[in-house]
Amino acid sequence: MRELLYLVHRIPYPPDKGDKIRSYHLLKYLSQHYRVHLGTFIDNEKDWNYLGKVKDLCGETCFVNLSPKVARLRSLGGLLFRQPLTLPYYRDKGLQAWVNNILETRSIRNILIFSSGMAQYVSHAAPARRIIDFVDIDSDKWMQYAATKTWPMDWIYRRESRLLLSYEKQVAKEFDGAAFVSEAEADLFKRLAPEAATKVTYFNNGVDADYFSPQVVYASPYAAGSNILVFTGAMDYWANVDAVDWFARAIFPVIRAGVPDVEFHIVGARPTANVLALATLPGVAVTGSVPDIRPYLAHASLAVAPLRIARGIQNKVLEAMAMEKIVVASPQAMEGLCALPGRELLVADNEDDFAHQIITLLQSKSHLAMGRAARVRVLEDYSWEKRPGAG
Image (tube, rainbow, N blue to C red):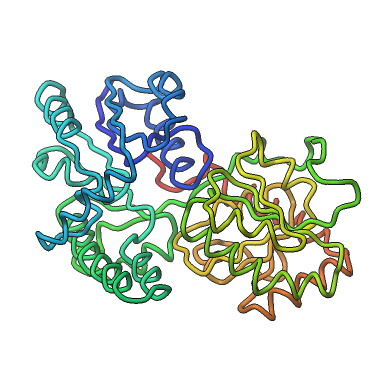
């Protein structure tokens, strides 16, 4: 069997958040066609429990502990050497030694890099065919972050955006191919890096529609008769934190004034202190980690995705759609998604629009066809088996 080196910035299991869902399904597919040698970081202590699951899909493996606090301190070295902070954040001598050994002792003709921070490990491996899955344009995320901050953090984030884009363009130029999560993301990068445009492609994320099925019966995690708006996602991820804070403080009170019994439930692991504080607001609940998000989606009235900072395709939107939930999303959360606004989901441009659309939905309860249409869209365009170019 052919051999392939796969480097991922975070262990591709469990598939419970955006990047890990994509990297896991890539690993699962590749393992059917290659002997995959995997090098990856583990930044969550609980993920050490899943080494067996990952090793079953791999040949040789290298798992490196990454402490986010230590990595953030290490990344500051980038300020001294005019390089993006992302590179020293993910730099590790042990992983580099393992990569060098694999390249020297194995017949590696194919290399897949997942996320820009991992490309540095194979900068010397030009004889092999190197493909990078950027997923999103991370440099653009940093520019979005900068717009929400004041000095000095806005300066640091703008610097990171500028230098990381330069690095992304360099990698795309040197590698044999570069993939993104959506056509919109790929088209934007082609405009940013026209010199590499012919190498750029995309493949959308998928959803396990059998797993996220509205046909399965779940016990409700909510009180009987509850009227629930739900947001799902990793609650230590900055974009999600910003989204729920904005929604809970600026939008939800208006909705609650129109529909007094409505509740807003924030469902996801590792909620930050800012997120936990939202539970003190009337009608807002923060669950923290749950064993299964599907009951929370199944018994919610609506799913909301009020993201103001976003790139690529939002798995949380696809998962809710797969379960026939009506999703009210921001334009940012909708970007890159092939779905018809007004028929398969709703898009709200601002605070007033969010509140108005949600109040109308909750009061009428006559939009079941939209939920059914949403699932049909997922089945037609977002199964992993149908991903264009996967593998």
